[in-house]
Length: 312
Length: 249
View (tube, chains in turn red, blue):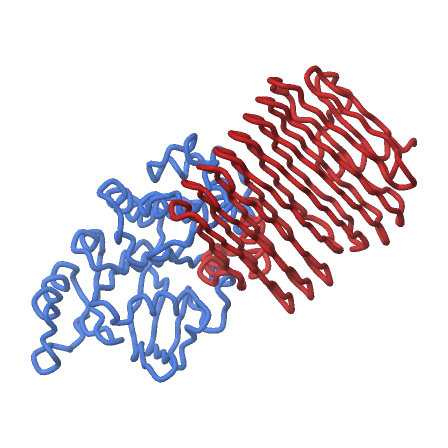
Protein backbone atom coordinates (compact mmCIF):
# COMPACT_ATOMS: atom_id res chain seq x y z
CA UNK A 1 0.00 0.00 0.00
CA UNK A 2 1.40 3.44 -0.89
CA UNK A 3 1.81 6.35 1.54
CA UNK A 4 -1.16 8.22 0.11
CA UNK A 5 -3.52 5.30 0.61
CA UNK A 6 -2.18 4.72 4.13
CA UNK A 7 -2.78 8.35 5.05
CA UNK A 8 -6.26 8.33 3.58
CA UNK A 9 -7.05 5.10 5.42
CA UNK A 10 -5.75 6.52 8.71
CA UNK A 11 -7.80 9.66 8.05
CA UNK A 12 -10.97 7.65 7.44
CA UNK A 13 -10.30 5.49 10.49
CA UNK A 14 -10.10 8.67 12.56
CA UNK A 15 -13.57 9.61 11.34
CA UNK A 16 -12.73 11.67 8.26
CA UNK A 17 -15.07 11.69 5.26
CA UNK A 18 -14.16 9.89 2.06
CA UNK A 19 -13.85 12.99 -0.11
CA UNK A 20 -10.48 12.74 -1.79
CA UNK A 21 -11.85 11.46 -5.08
CA UNK A 22 -14.44 14.21 -5.32
CA UNK A 23 -13.34 16.81 -7.85
CA UNK A 24 -15.55 19.45 -6.23
CA UNK A 25 -13.78 19.15 -2.89
CA UNK A 26 -10.39 20.81 -2.46
CA UNK A 27 -7.87 18.88 -0.42
CA UNK A 28 -4.31 18.63 0.73
CA UNK A 29 -2.64 15.50 2.12
CA UNK A 30 0.74 15.74 3.85
CA UNK A 31 2.63 12.92 5.50
CA UNK A 32 5.69 14.37 7.28
CA UNK A 33 7.28 16.44 4.51
CA UNK A 34 5.72 14.47 1.67
CA UNK A 35 3.00 16.14 -0.34
CA UNK A 36 0.83 13.17 -1.18
CA UNK A 37 -2.21 14.86 -2.61
CA UNK A 38 -3.36 18.32 -3.50
CA UNK A 39 -6.45 19.56 -5.28
CA UNK A 40 -7.90 23.05 -5.62
CA UNK A 41 -11.27 24.32 -6.78
CA UNK A 42 -12.33 27.53 -8.44
CA UNK A 43 -11.69 30.50 -6.19
CA UNK A 44 -9.22 28.63 -4.00
CA UNK A 45 -5.52 28.21 -4.53
CA UNK A 46 -3.32 25.79 -2.64
CA UNK A 47 0.44 25.77 -2.86
CA UNK A 48 2.64 23.36 -0.95
CA UNK A 49 6.43 23.10 -1.07
CA UNK A 50 8.91 21.14 0.90
CA UNK A 51 11.39 23.77 2.08
CA UNK A 52 13.65 21.64 4.22
CA UNK A 53 13.81 18.25 5.82
CA UNK A 54 10.53 17.65 7.72
CA UNK A 55 9.16 21.08 6.78
CA UNK A 56 6.47 21.99 4.29
CA UNK A 57 5.34 25.49 3.45
CA UNK A 58 1.65 25.74 2.57
CA UNK A 59 -0.15 28.74 1.19
CA UNK A 60 -3.93 28.77 0.89
CA UNK A 61 -5.62 31.69 -0.83
CA UNK A 62 -9.35 32.21 -1.13
CA UNK A 63 -9.90 34.80 -3.79
CA UNK A 64 -11.94 37.91 -3.35
CA UNK A 65 -15.68 37.35 -3.28
CA UNK A 66 -15.51 33.55 -3.64
CA UNK A 67 -17.64 31.44 -1.33
CA UNK A 68 -16.20 27.96 -1.45
CA UNK A 69 -19.17 25.62 -1.47
CA UNK A 70 -17.67 22.44 -0.01
CA UNK A 71 -15.40 22.34 3.01
CA UNK A 72 -11.72 22.03 2.14
CA UNK A 73 -10.20 18.87 3.59
CA UNK A 74 -6.67 18.84 4.90
CA UNK A 75 -5.05 15.71 6.17
CA UNK A 76 -1.75 16.01 8.01
CA UNK A 77 0.12 13.35 9.86
CA UNK A 78 3.03 11.10 10.60
CA UNK A 79 2.50 7.41 10.01
CA UNK A 80 5.64 5.81 11.48
CA UNK A 81 6.27 5.53 15.20
CA UNK A 82 8.82 8.30 15.06
CA UNK A 83 9.03 11.42 12.99
CA UNK A 84 8.63 15.13 12.77
CA UNK A 85 6.34 17.29 10.70
CA UNK A 86 6.54 21.04 10.56
CA UNK A 87 4.03 23.00 8.55
CA UNK A 88 4.43 26.69 7.88
CA UNK A 89 0.95 27.69 6.88
CA UNK A 90 -0.16 30.96 5.43
CA UNK A 91 -3.86 31.51 4.84
CA UNK A 92 -5.17 34.49 3.02
CA UNK A 93 -8.91 34.99 2.90
CA UNK A 94 -9.48 37.88 0.57
CA UNK A 95 -12.24 40.44 0.76
CA UNK A 96 -15.72 38.90 1.13
CA UNK A 97 -14.42 35.39 0.53
CA UNK A 98 -15.66 32.46 2.62
CA UNK A 99 -14.27 29.03 3.29
CA UNK A 100 -14.53 26.22 5.78
CA UNK A 101 -11.53 23.97 6.33
CA UNK A 102 -11.63 20.58 8.01
CA UNK A 103 -8.18 19.52 9.06
CA UNK A 104 -7.60 16.01 10.34
CA UNK A 105 -4.27 15.33 11.94
CA UNK A 106 -3.52 11.63 12.30
CA UNK A 107 -0.67 10.06 14.23
CA UNK A 108 -2.02 6.54 14.73
CA UNK A 109 1.27 4.81 15.58
CA UNK A 110 3.10 7.65 17.30
CA UNK A 111 5.66 6.81 19.94
CA UNK A 112 7.91 9.81 19.41
CA UNK A 113 6.33 12.20 16.97
CA UNK A 114 6.49 15.97 16.77
CA UNK A 115 3.93 17.99 14.86
CA UNK A 116 4.57 21.69 14.58
CA UNK A 117 2.14 24.11 12.99
CA UNK A 118 3.17 27.68 12.50
CA UNK A 119 0.31 29.61 10.96
CA UNK A 120 -0.36 33.14 9.81
CA UNK A 121 -3.98 33.77 8.97
CA UNK A 122 -5.20 36.99 7.40
CA UNK A 123 -8.90 37.51 6.90
CA UNK A 124 -9.70 40.57 4.83
CA UNK A 125 -12.79 42.73 5.23
CA UNK A 126 -15.97 40.68 5.11
CA UNK A 127 -14.06 37.42 4.79
CA UNK A 128 -14.91 34.28 6.71
CA UNK A 129 -12.60 31.43 7.73
CA UNK A 130 -13.90 28.45 9.67
CA UNK A 131 -11.20 26.00 10.69
CA UNK A 132 -12.19 22.73 12.32
CA UNK A 133 -9.24 20.66 13.42
CA UNK A 134 -9.68 17.11 14.56
CA UNK A 135 -6.78 15.12 15.96
CA UNK A 136 -6.30 11.39 16.30
CA UNK A 137 -3.18 10.42 18.21
CA UNK A 138 -3.43 6.67 18.82
CA UNK A 139 -3.00 5.06 22.22
CA UNK A 140 0.70 5.51 22.92
CA UNK A 141 0.72 9.15 23.93
CA UNK A 142 3.86 9.76 21.96
CA UNK A 143 2.80 12.89 20.13
CA UNK A 144 3.89 16.42 20.82
CA UNK A 145 1.83 19.06 19.07
CA UNK A 146 3.11 22.62 19.05
CA UNK A 147 0.80 25.02 17.27
CA UNK A 148 1.20 28.74 16.93
CA UNK A 149 -1.13 31.03 15.03
CA UNK A 150 -1.02 34.74 14.36
CA UNK A 151 -4.41 35.82 13.18
CA UNK A 152 -5.64 39.10 11.81
CA UNK A 153 -9.34 39.66 11.20
CA UNK A 154 -10.26 42.85 9.37
CA UNK A 155 -13.57 44.70 9.55
CA UNK A 156 -16.67 42.51 9.34
CA UNK A 157 -14.43 39.49 9.03
CA UNK A 158 -15.07 36.22 10.84
CA UNK A 159 -12.83 33.55 12.27
CA UNK A 160 -13.93 30.32 13.90
CA UNK A 161 -11.46 27.71 15.10
CA UNK A 162 -12.63 24.48 16.61
CA UNK A 163 -10.11 21.99 17.88
CA UNK A 164 -11.02 18.56 19.18
CA UNK A 165 -9.09 15.60 20.45
CA UNK A 166 -11.55 13.25 22.05
CA UNK A 167 -10.26 9.74 21.38
CA UNK A 168 -6.90 8.22 22.05
CA UNK A 169 -4.07 9.87 23.97
CA UNK A 170 -3.20 13.55 23.80
CA UNK A 171 0.50 13.19 24.52
CA UNK A 172 1.57 16.79 24.79
CA UNK A 173 -0.23 19.76 23.32
CA UNK A 174 1.05 23.30 23.40
CA UNK A 175 -1.11 25.86 21.61
CA UNK A 176 -0.54 29.56 21.30
CA UNK A 177 -3.15 31.40 19.25
CA UNK A 178 -3.27 35.17 19.05
CA UNK A 179 -5.93 37.09 17.14
CA UNK A 180 -6.51 40.79 16.47
CA UNK A 181 -10.04 41.70 15.54
CA UNK A 182 -11.04 44.91 13.77
CA UNK A 183 -14.41 46.68 13.86
CA UNK A 184 -17.46 44.41 13.57
CA UNK A 185 -15.17 41.44 13.21
CA UNK A 186 -15.82 38.24 15.15
CA UNK A 187 -13.69 35.49 16.55
CA UNK A 188 -14.65 32.18 18.16
CA UNK A 189 -12.01 29.82 19.42
CA UNK A 190 -13.27 26.52 20.75
CA UNK A 191 -11.22 23.67 22.15
CA UNK A 192 -12.48 20.24 23.25
CA UNK A 193 -9.88 17.89 24.65
CA UNK A 194 -9.99 14.67 26.62
CA UNK A 195 -6.73 13.84 28.41
CA UNK A 196 -5.63 10.74 30.29
CA UNK A 197 -2.60 9.03 31.84
CA UNK A 198 0.27 11.55 31.81
CA UNK A 199 -1.08 13.72 28.97
CA UNK A 200 -0.23 17.37 29.14
CA UNK A 201 -2.39 20.13 27.67
CA UNK A 202 -1.32 23.73 27.50
CA UNK A 203 -3.47 26.17 25.63
CA UNK A 204 -3.10 29.89 25.28
CA UNK A 205 -5.81 31.58 23.27
CA UNK A 206 -5.76 35.35 23.06
CA UNK A 207 -8.13 37.60 21.18
CA UNK A 208 -7.86 41.36 21.09
CA UNK A 209 -11.08 43.12 20.21
CA UNK A 210 -9.55 46.28 18.81
CA UNK A 211 -12.31 47.60 16.63
CA UNK A 212 -15.72 48.99 17.47
CA UNK A 213 -18.38 46.29 17.93
CA UNK A 214 -15.85 43.50 17.58
CA UNK A 215 -16.98 40.23 19.14
CA UNK A 216 -15.05 37.37 20.67
CA UNK A 217 -15.69 34.03 22.35
CA UNK A 218 -13.01 31.82 23.82
CA UNK A 219 -14.46 28.53 24.95
CA UNK A 220 -12.46 25.59 26.29
CA UNK A 221 -13.88 22.34 27.57
CA UNK A 222 -11.40 19.86 28.91
CA UNK A 223 -11.87 16.47 30.57
CA UNK A 224 -8.93 14.91 32.40
CA UNK A 225 -8.37 11.67 34.21
CA UNK A 226 -5.50 9.62 35.66
CA UNK A 227 -2.48 11.93 36.05
CA UNK A 228 -3.26 14.21 33.09
CA UNK A 229 -2.66 17.94 33.49
CA UNK A 230 -4.02 21.00 31.73
CA UNK A 231 -3.29 24.71 31.83
CA UNK A 232 -5.66 26.94 29.96
CA UNK A 233 -4.82 30.59 29.43
CA UNK A 234 -7.72 32.46 27.86
CA UNK A 235 -7.04 36.11 27.24
CA UNK A 236 -9.64 38.48 25.90
CA UNK A 237 -9.03 42.19 25.65
CA UNK A 238 -11.44 44.87 24.46
CA UNK A 239 -10.25 48.35 23.48
CA UNK A 240 -13.15 49.83 21.56
CA UNK A 241 -16.75 50.93 21.98
CA UNK A 242 -19.35 48.14 21.89
CA UNK A 243 -16.68 45.49 21.76
CA UNK A 244 -18.04 42.42 23.54
CA UNK A 245 -16.67 39.07 24.45
CA UNK A 246 -16.95 36.06 26.68
CA UNK A 247 -14.43 33.59 28.04
CA UNK A 248 -15.65 30.19 29.17
CA UNK A 249 -13.47 27.44 30.52
CA UNK A 250 -14.90 24.21 31.91
CA UNK A 251 -12.63 21.43 33.08
CA UNK A 252 -13.80 18.15 34.56
CA UNK A 253 -11.21 16.20 36.48
CA UNK A 254 -11.07 12.68 37.86
CA UNK A 255 -8.47 10.63 39.70
CA UNK A 256 -5.22 12.55 40.23
CA UNK A 257 -5.66 14.88 37.26
CA UNK A 258 -4.77 18.55 37.66
CA UNK A 259 -6.44 21.44 35.87
CA UNK A 260 -5.69 25.12 35.91
CA UNK A 261 -7.68 27.88 34.25
CA UNK A 262 -6.18 31.34 33.99
CA UNK A 263 -8.58 33.77 32.35
CA UNK A 264 -7.34 37.25 31.59
CA UNK A 265 -9.98 39.83 30.87
CA UNK A 266 -8.75 43.29 30.00
CA UNK A 267 -11.22 46.03 29.09
CA UNK A 268 -10.00 49.51 28.16
CA UNK A 269 -13.12 51.23 26.94
CA UNK A 270 -16.11 52.14 29.10
CA UNK A 271 -18.54 50.89 26.44
CA UNK A 272 -16.84 47.55 25.99
CA UNK A 273 -17.79 44.45 27.95
CA UNK A 274 -16.12 41.12 28.51
CA UNK A 275 -17.36 38.38 30.81
CA UNK A 276 -15.77 35.17 31.92
CA UNK A 277 -16.72 31.90 33.57
CA UNK A 278 -14.43 29.17 34.73
CA UNK A 279 -15.44 25.94 36.39
CA UNK A 280 -13.14 23.16 37.43
CA UNK A 281 -14.34 20.15 39.33
CA UNK A 282 -15.50 16.61 39.23
CA UNK A 283 -18.61 15.42 37.46
CA UNK A 284 -21.74 17.03 38.92
CA UNK A 285 -23.29 14.62 41.42
CA UNK A 286 -26.92 15.36 40.52
CA UNK A 287 -26.21 14.77 36.84
CA UNK A 288 -24.38 11.59 37.72
CA UNK A 289 -27.01 10.22 40.07
CA UNK A 290 -29.85 11.02 37.70
CA UNK A 291 -28.23 8.80 35.10
CA UNK A 292 -27.51 6.15 37.71
CA UNK A 293 -31.20 6.21 38.59
CA UNK A 294 -31.72 5.17 34.95
CA UNK A 295 -29.56 2.10 35.55
CA UNK A 296 -26.12 3.30 34.38
CA UNK A 297 -23.15 2.53 36.57
CA UNK A 298 -20.95 5.39 37.75
CA UNK A 299 -18.36 4.96 35.00
CA UNK A 300 -20.96 4.86 32.23
CA UNK A 301 -22.79 7.87 33.66
CA UNK A 302 -19.54 9.88 33.92
CA UNK A 303 -18.73 9.04 30.33
CA UNK A 304 -22.13 10.29 29.10
CA UNK A 305 -21.66 13.58 30.97
CA UNK A 306 -18.07 14.10 29.84
CA UNK A 307 -18.76 13.23 26.21
CA UNK A 308 -21.74 15.56 26.27
CA UNK A 309 -19.63 18.39 27.60
CA UNK A 310 -16.98 17.79 24.96
CA UNK A 311 -19.54 17.52 22.16
CA UNK A 312 -21.24 20.75 23.16
CA UNK B 1 -52.78 -5.96 45.13
CA UNK B 2 -49.40 -7.18 46.42
CA UNK B 3 -46.83 -5.21 48.41
CA UNK B 4 -44.32 -3.45 46.22
CA UNK B 5 -42.51 -1.41 48.85
CA UNK B 6 -42.40 -1.57 52.61
CA UNK B 7 -40.62 1.05 54.65
CA UNK B 8 -40.12 0.09 58.28
CA UNK B 9 -38.87 2.30 61.10
CA UNK B 10 -36.57 4.27 58.78
CA UNK B 11 -34.14 6.61 60.49
CA UNK B 12 -31.68 8.91 58.77
CA UNK B 13 -29.28 11.34 60.32
CA UNK B 14 -27.10 13.68 58.30
CA UNK B 15 -24.31 15.08 60.43
CA UNK B 16 -26.15 15.92 63.66
CA UNK B 17 -29.57 16.45 62.15
CA UNK B 18 -32.07 13.63 62.48
CA UNK B 19 -34.13 13.99 59.31
CA UNK B 20 -36.11 10.77 59.14
CA UNK B 21 -37.43 9.57 62.47
CA UNK B 22 -38.94 6.15 62.07
CA UNK B 23 -40.83 6.44 58.78
CA UNK B 24 -43.24 3.60 58.14
CA UNK B 25 -45.48 3.00 55.16
CA UNK B 26 -46.11 0.57 52.36
CA UNK B 27 -47.03 0.85 48.71
CA UNK B 28 -48.85 -1.60 46.47
CA UNK B 29 -48.45 -2.27 42.76
CA UNK B 30 -50.62 0.05 40.68
CA UNK B 31 -51.10 2.38 43.64
CA UNK B 32 -50.37 6.08 43.93
CA UNK B 33 -49.31 6.96 47.45
CA UNK B 34 -48.84 10.66 48.11
CA UNK B 35 -46.66 12.26 50.74
CA UNK B 36 -47.46 15.82 51.69
CA UNK B 37 -45.97 18.04 54.32
CA UNK B 38 -44.35 21.41 54.84
CA UNK B 39 -40.97 22.32 53.36
CA UNK B 40 -38.08 20.69 55.17
CA UNK B 41 -40.16 17.91 56.72
CA UNK B 42 -38.11 15.15 55.09
CA UNK B 43 -40.13 14.24 51.99
CA UNK B 44 -37.33 14.70 49.47
CA UNK B 45 -34.86 13.14 51.89
CA UNK B 46 -37.05 10.06 51.94
CA UNK B 47 -37.06 10.03 48.12
CA UNK B 48 -33.25 10.19 48.00
CA UNK B 49 -32.96 7.52 50.69
CA UNK B 50 -35.24 5.17 48.81
CA UNK B 51 -33.26 5.73 45.60
CA UNK B 52 -29.94 5.21 47.38
CA UNK B 53 -28.45 8.61 46.64
CA UNK B 54 -24.98 9.17 48.11
CA UNK B 55 -24.98 10.33 51.73
CA UNK B 56 -28.59 9.22 52.23
CA UNK B 57 -27.90 5.90 53.88
CA UNK B 58 -30.29 5.10 56.74
CA UNK B 59 -28.77 4.29 60.12
CA UNK B 60 -31.78 2.20 61.11
CA UNK B 61 -34.81 0.61 59.54
CA UNK B 62 -35.57 -1.33 56.41
CA UNK B 63 -36.56 -0.60 52.84
CA UNK B 64 -38.07 -3.73 51.36
CA UNK B 65 -38.82 -3.81 47.65
CA UNK B 66 -40.69 -6.82 46.28
CA UNK B 67 -39.75 -8.75 49.37
CA UNK B 68 -36.03 -7.90 49.15
CA UNK B 69 -34.19 -5.58 51.50
CA UNK B 70 -32.55 -2.92 49.35
CA UNK B 71 -30.74 -0.84 52.00
CA UNK B 72 -27.30 -1.85 50.73
CA UNK B 73 -27.96 -1.63 46.99
CA UNK B 74 -26.37 1.13 44.91
CA UNK B 75 -28.52 3.54 42.92
CA UNK B 76 -28.04 1.79 39.62
CA UNK B 77 -28.70 -1.61 41.18
CA UNK B 78 -32.00 -0.32 42.51
CA UNK B 79 -32.75 1.17 39.07
CA UNK B 80 -32.08 -2.16 37.40
CA UNK B 81 -34.56 -3.77 39.76
CA UNK B 82 -37.21 -1.29 38.58
CA UNK B 83 -36.95 1.64 41.01
CA UNK B 84 -36.42 5.15 39.71
CA UNK B 85 -36.65 8.73 40.83
CA UNK B 86 -37.71 11.85 38.97
CA UNK B 87 -36.04 14.80 40.69
CA UNK B 88 -37.87 17.98 41.57
CA UNK B 89 -35.31 19.85 39.44
CA UNK B 90 -34.12 17.40 36.80
CA UNK B 91 -30.46 17.69 35.90
CA UNK B 92 -29.47 19.28 32.62
CA UNK B 93 -26.78 17.97 30.35
CA UNK B 94 -24.63 20.01 28.00
CA UNK B 95 -24.13 18.33 24.66
CA UNK B 96 -26.48 15.39 25.34
CA UNK B 97 -29.41 15.26 22.96
CA UNK B 98 -32.93 14.25 23.91
CA UNK B 99 -32.42 11.21 21.66
CA UNK B 100 -29.29 10.15 23.57
CA UNK B 101 -30.85 10.86 26.94
CA UNK B 102 -33.96 8.80 26.19
CA UNK B 103 -31.88 5.98 24.73
CA UNK B 104 -30.09 5.55 28.05
CA UNK B 105 -33.29 4.34 29.69
CA UNK B 106 -33.76 1.70 27.00
CA UNK B 107 -30.13 0.62 27.03
CA UNK B 108 -30.14 0.17 30.80
CA UNK B 109 -33.05 -2.24 30.35
CA UNK B 110 -31.07 -3.98 27.57
CA UNK B 111 -33.81 -3.06 25.14
CA UNK B 112 -33.19 -2.21 21.53
CA UNK B 113 -33.25 1.52 20.85
CA UNK B 114 -35.57 2.32 17.98
CA UNK B 115 -36.74 5.65 16.63
CA UNK B 116 -40.34 4.48 17.03
CA UNK B 117 -39.96 3.84 20.76
CA UNK B 118 -38.38 7.26 21.32
CA UNK B 119 -41.06 9.03 19.32
CA UNK B 120 -43.86 7.15 21.06
CA UNK B 121 -42.52 8.12 24.49
CA UNK B 122 -42.22 11.78 23.51
CA UNK B 123 -45.68 11.82 21.97
CA UNK B 124 -47.08 10.47 25.23
CA UNK B 125 -45.74 13.52 27.08
CA UNK B 126 -46.97 15.91 24.36
CA UNK B 127 -43.50 16.69 23.04
CA UNK B 128 -43.08 16.86 19.28
CA UNK B 129 -40.29 14.37 18.42
CA UNK B 130 -39.34 16.16 15.21
CA UNK B 131 -38.66 19.34 17.13
CA UNK B 132 -37.02 17.89 20.19
CA UNK B 133 -35.10 14.68 19.47
CA UNK B 134 -31.99 16.54 18.37
CA UNK B 135 -32.20 19.29 20.98
CA UNK B 136 -29.87 19.22 23.93
CA UNK B 137 -31.16 18.38 27.42
CA UNK B 138 -29.61 21.61 28.65
CA UNK B 139 -30.63 25.01 29.94
CA UNK B 140 -32.35 25.85 26.66
CA UNK B 141 -35.32 23.70 27.73
CA UNK B 142 -37.97 25.24 29.94
CA UNK B 143 -38.72 23.65 33.32
CA UNK B 144 -41.91 22.09 31.94
CA UNK B 145 -40.19 20.72 28.83
CA UNK B 146 -37.41 19.24 30.92
CA UNK B 147 -39.89 17.56 33.28
CA UNK B 148 -41.85 16.08 30.40
CA UNK B 149 -38.66 14.71 28.86
CA UNK B 150 -37.87 13.20 32.25
CA UNK B 151 -41.25 11.47 32.20
CA UNK B 152 -40.61 10.22 28.66
CA UNK B 153 -37.37 8.66 29.86
CA UNK B 154 -39.29 6.95 32.69
CA UNK B 155 -41.79 5.54 30.20
CA UNK B 156 -38.93 3.88 28.33
CA UNK B 157 -37.54 2.34 31.53
CA UNK B 158 -40.83 0.58 32.44
CA UNK B 159 -40.12 1.09 36.15
CA UNK B 160 -42.15 -0.76 38.74
CA UNK B 161 -41.64 1.83 41.47
CA UNK B 162 -41.53 5.50 40.53
CA UNK B 163 -40.66 8.19 43.03
CA UNK B 164 -41.92 11.54 41.76
CA UNK B 165 -40.45 14.39 43.78
CA UNK B 166 -42.73 17.41 43.37
CA UNK B 167 -43.44 16.75 39.69
CA UNK B 168 -45.73 19.78 39.56
CA UNK B 169 -43.28 22.40 40.82
CA UNK B 170 -42.34 25.11 38.37
CA UNK B 171 -44.41 23.84 35.46
CA UNK B 172 -47.10 25.44 33.35
CA UNK B 173 -50.66 24.19 33.04
CA UNK B 174 -49.89 22.14 29.90
CA UNK B 175 -47.10 20.29 31.63
CA UNK B 176 -49.22 19.89 34.75
CA UNK B 177 -52.03 18.20 32.83
CA UNK B 178 -49.49 16.01 31.13
CA UNK B 179 -47.90 14.99 34.41
CA UNK B 180 -51.34 14.04 35.73
CA UNK B 181 -52.00 11.94 32.63
CA UNK B 182 -48.65 10.24 33.07
CA UNK B 183 -49.40 9.38 36.69
CA UNK B 184 -52.53 7.61 35.48
CA UNK B 185 -50.58 5.95 32.65
CA UNK B 186 -47.98 4.54 35.03
CA UNK B 187 -50.65 3.46 37.49
CA UNK B 188 -52.58 1.68 34.73
CA UNK B 189 -49.35 -0.01 33.66
CA UNK B 190 -49.08 -1.49 37.16
CA UNK B 191 -46.31 0.75 38.49
CA UNK B 192 -46.44 1.89 42.08
CA UNK B 193 -45.96 5.62 42.49
CA UNK B 194 -44.67 7.49 45.50
CA UNK B 195 -45.85 11.01 44.83
CA UNK B 196 -44.24 13.80 46.80
CA UNK B 197 -46.19 16.99 46.44
CA UNK B 198 -47.47 20.19 47.94
CA UNK B 199 -50.32 20.44 45.52
CA UNK B 200 -53.94 19.66 46.22
CA UNK B 201 -54.48 19.07 42.51
CA UNK B 202 -51.84 16.37 42.47
CA UNK B 203 -53.37 14.73 45.53
CA UNK B 204 -56.49 14.04 43.46
CA UNK B 205 -54.50 11.44 41.57
CA UNK B 206 -53.45 9.60 44.72
CA UNK B 207 -55.16 6.52 46.11
CA UNK B 208 -53.81 7.12 49.58
CA UNK B 209 -51.87 9.90 51.23
CA UNK B 210 -49.74 10.55 54.27
CA UNK B 211 -48.78 13.70 56.09
CA UNK B 212 -45.13 14.07 56.96
CA UNK B 213 -44.06 16.29 59.83
CA UNK B 214 -40.49 16.66 61.06
CA UNK B 215 -39.33 13.36 59.61
CA UNK B 216 -42.31 11.29 60.68
CA UNK B 217 -45.54 10.21 59.08
CA UNK B 218 -48.13 11.55 61.47
CA UNK B 219 -51.24 10.64 59.56
CA UNK B 220 -52.21 8.35 56.69
CA UNK B 221 -55.46 7.84 54.89
CA UNK B 222 -57.78 9.23 52.28
CA UNK B 223 -56.07 12.00 50.23
CA UNK B 224 -58.95 14.42 50.70
CA UNK B 225 -58.91 13.99 54.47
CA UNK B 226 -55.14 14.30 54.65
CA UNK B 227 -55.26 17.42 52.51
CA UNK B 228 -57.94 18.94 54.73
CA UNK B 229 -55.94 18.14 57.83
CA UNK B 230 -52.80 19.59 56.27
CA UNK B 231 -54.57 22.86 55.47
CA UNK B 232 -56.19 23.07 58.87
CA UNK B 233 -53.28 22.24 61.11
CA UNK B 234 -50.10 22.94 59.21
CA UNK B 235 -50.61 26.52 57.99
CA UNK B 236 -49.63 27.82 60.43
CA UNK B 237 -48.27 24.84 62.29
CA UNK B 238 -50.63 23.94 65.13
CA UNK B 239 -47.71 22.85 67.30
CA UNK B 240 -47.55 19.55 69.05
CA UNK B 241 -50.14 20.18 71.74
CA UNK B 242 -52.94 20.76 69.21
CA UNK B 243 -51.76 18.45 66.50
CA UNK B 244 -53.30 15.02 66.37
CA UNK B 245 -50.30 12.80 65.79
CA UNK B 246 -52.05 9.47 65.86
CA UNK B 247 -51.44 7.61 62.63
CA UNK B 248 -54.63 6.61 60.97
CA UNK B 249 -54.32 3.63 58.66
